[in-house]
Amino acid sequence: MTTTKIEKVLLTGKTRTTVNRTKARPAGENHLDIQLSTPNFPKLVHSFQDIQPHPTAEQLFAGAWSACYISALALVAKQHKIELPTSTAVDIEVDLGVSGSAYLLQARLNAFLPGLDQALAEQIAHAADEICPYSKATRGNIDVALNVLTS
Image (cartoon, rainbow, N blue to C red; front, side, top):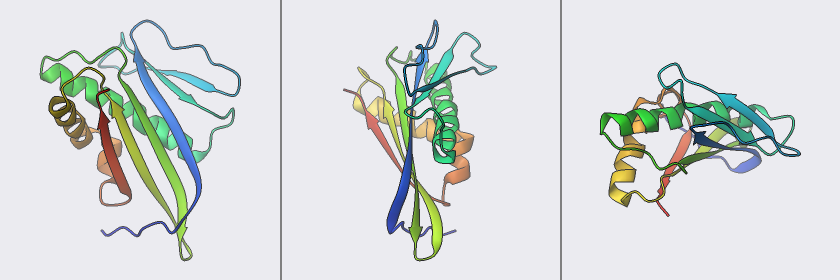
């Protein structure tokens, strides 16, 4: 399937997901803070935080995707016997836009793996992208950019 480029972005849903091995950060004013868990890693708490009290569909999609993706990062790291940095985070931005009369989505994934070697961080991030169900579902259907940052 070919994707069409967005000509005009109408809105962007932004999320940040972090892993906190003790508890999620408390919600601040105008923030939605949801604690998520995964059956394979019951001791990990995922914190999905966005900037509006009533999230948009794009924010909810980005939040679910980032929670799934950060779990995939943890799984890949575990398979390689690597411990992810405690400040690992995933920011996902999902744009709703138009091209002509068609409504489209596009996304940017930013994986923050501070302190890891850049090549190793990219290897983990791309392997996680291959196994994450949300990444699989969007592959070839929307434009997605994956950025890996280590500092």
